[in-house]
Image (tube, rainbow, N blue to C red; front, side):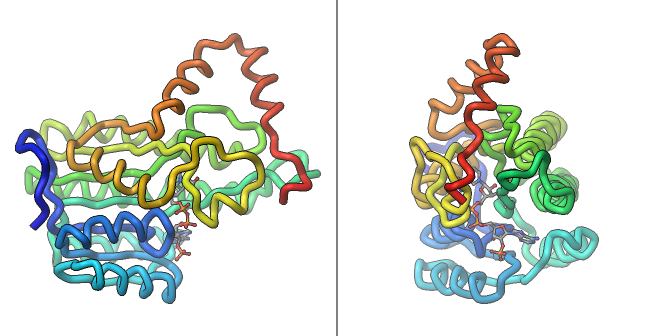
Length: 268
Ligand SMILES: NC(=O)c1ccc[n+]([C@@H]2O[C@H](COP(=O)([O-])OP(=O)(O)OC[C@H]3O[C@@H](n4cnc5c(N)ncnc54)[C@H](OP(=O)(O)O)[C@@H]3O)[C@@H](O)[C@H]2O)c1
């Protein structure tokens, strides 16, 4: 059983689904809940990485660990799988951490349409559909927590990463709306908006990564937000300030600033 620091308004995390557990942030979240004795269902696409994450959770003290290999671009199959897994486990916490990051290929005028479609599917369509499905089930049980992993990139109209920023912005709006709808039914929906997390996926995208957090640190902060049912957790906090600055700047200045952020081609 997981213990929490105070008794007020906290979401239990005994039966936890982590979607994207084969990734670095997802695996760190899985280890976090494993160390607190959670029963875990880990979803991932790559079988080897998923099994490595599962083994780390067994070593860390998880009560039980199950895995499911799944490709989120097959959304109907994922919806069916979630029904099966939730029937068996009755999740009290689900974290949707799977996601893709990419930017416009240097030299191209616009992003590759296939990449745009893939990012939309993995970063928005699948997590929104699955969160909606689970929200309905949790609402019927009158309890539960859902965490969607967005990005601070969603706060800005990044001209070199329109698909990433757009997919995460869509997820953010979805999370906010779902949180309002679910609250009367005892279900807390949290949007986590990290800045940079020092993972291999992030390192593949060129450019500076100020205030990058380790995956473990990001996971601890996300777990804290999940425990308290925080509606929106921005980490680290200066990214919340950048969001305000983005909103306050006149459009011509903001657009010039955003254009100047385009990563140099030689970084790829
Ligand atoms: N790293 C950062 O700086 C940063 C900042 C803000 C937000 N985020 C968000 O944090 C989350 C995790 O990022 P990360 O850096 O840990 O990346 P990562 O290590 O590449 O993990 C990404 C995860 O998404 C899964 N995934 C990708 N495409 C999939 C698909 N079609 N079907 C099923 N699963 C799929 C991967 O599965 P496989 O590995 O099995 O293919 C993996 O589990 C993402 O949502 C990302 O957008 C990251």
